[in-house]
Image 1 (tube, each protein chain N blue to C red):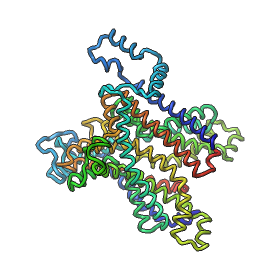
Image 2 (image 1 turned 30 degrees about the vertical axis):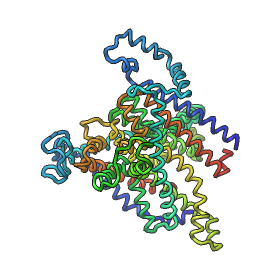
Image 3 (image 1 turned 60 degrees about the vertical axis):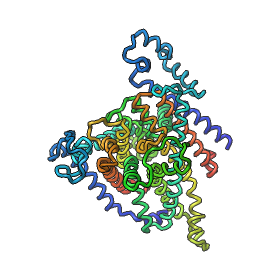
Image 4 (image 1 turned 135 degrees about the horizontal axis):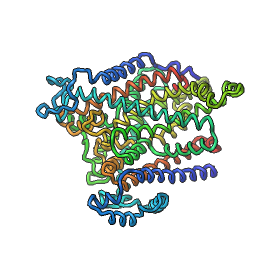
Length: 278
Length: 316
């Protein structure tokens, strides 16, 4: 069965390392942003507007208000990373809780919750995120909540499936036979078994979350000006592509690199933790 | 088969009703009073109460939903607050433009993705295989709104070969040539993610099938490699491709919103973004309902097609 796959050309180590380097570099730059010798990301200088990359004092050039693009890209990394990580954590925690309870206890609750999740999954997820932003009002926090809520159902389904398999295993039966409480079985026997699948899912999901929140900001439903956010920077730069293409190209490149890094790490993690999914 | 069909139709109907309830509820719970929006900040409390009564906003929520859903089922989705026109013709017109865009993207992504996947799987580890995996990884990681801008910068601004924006209606004065010229860049942009996904899935499905005994048998009896790959192996990956096709159409319809915004394409996603920003809720409701209902129908069609292709499914 796996003979064809063994010929697969993957060199997971090298790709995973490249991804890890990208993600770490972005994370370190974002964390150190206040300490780095950067210009104020919101300081405008109309006389130096749309400066090209490598212009004196502007390593990556400046935007339409003369703000330093390098500084804004690095400060923007903080927004993108925080939004991506927090949204993923929210979705993971809520989804895992729902999946654990429904999968372990089953019954009417399970049936009702799963029908609700089917309903949520009947929407294309970008559409659902837009609907939520419409209800909550445009803004960075609301966009983050919307992206998280949309993804809860994916985690819930995945975790529930894993729990259903584990529940029938002999070691769970044994734990029950020696008199373990349900809570203890959940904590000590089921939870450790689903950590692997959850980690794989998180690593595959975080890039999508970052793209989605940047996308919502790009169409004006996420972060609002003057926040230095990659999505809003791209939207701002869009108006000047005929005269200064770099203003839009650079924040987009930043999103691409970070998401690529996350996806490479995710792929590597998946291969390491769950060979069946390869 | 008939029982399966009936079962699927009824559950799809339930999903559509559920979807309409979610759409109604989401915007019902949104902050902001429609009566206040319509009358403006100078309205007196009496005027507001009267208008709320006229609009039925003082009735219980389920009654309001019932009235809204009954009208929606009859094709009356209300009037847009900003455009001051009925919602239905507007969303249908915009949806046509989105369908043209999604159709163009699908025509690019599907055949190319399948071809790339089959060729990669035929020779795992070859240069083409490695290249296609890199393309897939890059394609999935590039945000569509950025790719769109890069294409506009390259092909419209620098080279001047293709128009970057300026699409007004799918059926206009310019004719087919004009439509295609406007369609190329947005369709290429929108096709990247589905292309990557289709090629990856085709590759992994093909590798699974190629490892099966009957493929070995086909080889053993002396079939040419082309016939083994193209006839014995490929036909058996078609079943899973049907599912992917259904999923990708859903992605294309809703995911088009970024591409439409970049290229100012007059589609339903672009319309909804503006409607959300101006808090034009009837238009948002109409747009979401139309796309979600289409998605349900596509999923239903996928399931039925699946049952046609794979008889085992009918008995589930």
